[in-house]
Length: 316
Image (cartoon, rainbow, N blue to C red; front, side, top):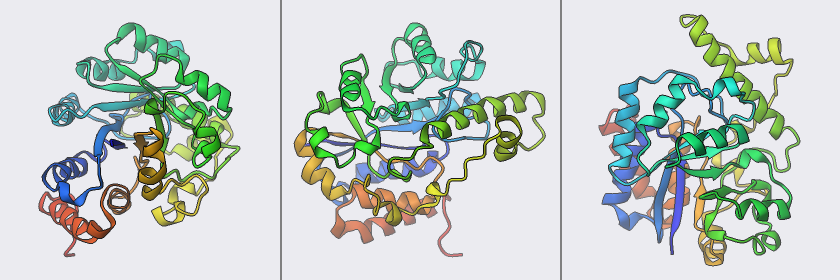
């Protein structure tokens, strides 16, 4: 049995995830059967192709090379969240995104796509990349989802409104290439989700423009949205704790993963948390991947190693 997790984020949580990777390798007795790291997903900011979450900051080329080597040398792919739905032709030749794609073009790394325009560009210019169809597409019709699974994608991230609807899940083909987002924080059936993804895409484009024109001035995402898009989506979903998301109908528990999903043939699971705190991520990783009876000891070991590496401070 394989249970493969796609984890956040190779840039923002770089050293955190290196410590976790070492823990999985060196302390396998803590972990549930078949746990593997399928990828670390995210982007190197300020990637204009990014979608799903607004990610600020700037990465140097040396940092990009270091991160690629650190994870790829262990056989772990980086999976780029290139899911901006509002890209135009002019954005395809973005120097930073293309630099990242060239540096990571080794046959191991992957890209998550949403925009048909960008997807075709990547397929043509960077054919070595395995492509994932994004949940940002909001494919909520079961027949449409089945057709998406027949296309040339390495993985299809299922819309999480399908989670726990086993009458639908049982009928879907190619379960081995379906990825389940297990800990979604968004309201089930949210009517604003697609609009929110579009707004995030607009923000990423505006942020990149701001960096070029006024690099020494701060950029306020909400001020931009109100001024230029006329919309500020007030959403507190991302503030939900792991324990609050467990109450949602879309929540997939670890017991369900091993007791229902994996026996049905599902083996790809995504944990969201690109902009989450380290405390949230520790609890999330312990909850999903560690045996219940080992969580306390594993959590202590994880925090100890994070502190030893200067990533968190526990003793005040």
